[in-house]
Image (tube, rainbow over all chains, first blue to last red; front, side, top):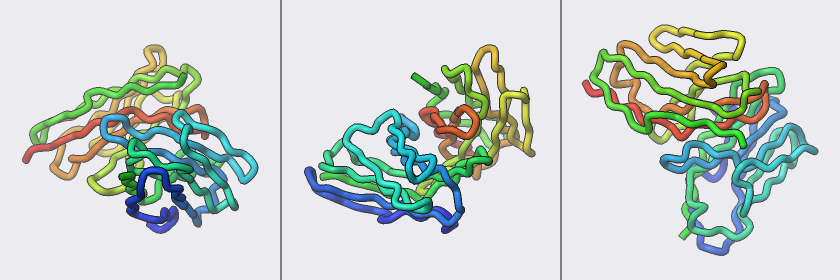
Length: 112
Length: 111
């Protein structure tokens, strides 16, 4: 399903480096979300956006920033990566009128 | 803040048996409760959902029940098969807002 595309799929980076994870979608959805997945902790919300001018912090936004460049693009940045940001990151989209999420394929990030 | 607790964290059943996963939510304004299945190495996929105006919903071998008073909802899988083995997540939200997920349940179905 190429409706929600995340790049890169895998990335290894060093502590202190800046890294950007990208998400683009062709579904025409207004609402976009970034989650991280850690074993035993489920999916935790980092940031979300209801449109280009509306950005909101989630439950674990510290150490992260986002940019909604267009309706179809929502990027997540780690300004200075640290090892405990090693996780699987998912982007998701949702239409204003539809309750279901569509997830991207995920980005596996390792900070060494 | 908003919170969703999910139990058990792991569940092992014999093929053909039933499996039940339970979740509790804290935000009484939540009105949408989906369940996602995540197979190894793949993205979560929506398998069933329920809204607060309904107490139960079924789709073939899976069903979800909701108790708004107790703020509990549960996933029931009957006649389990090996391909049901996966991680299952419950979630809750207000309308089409952000989803808050439970911690996940790893279901293993033994042949």
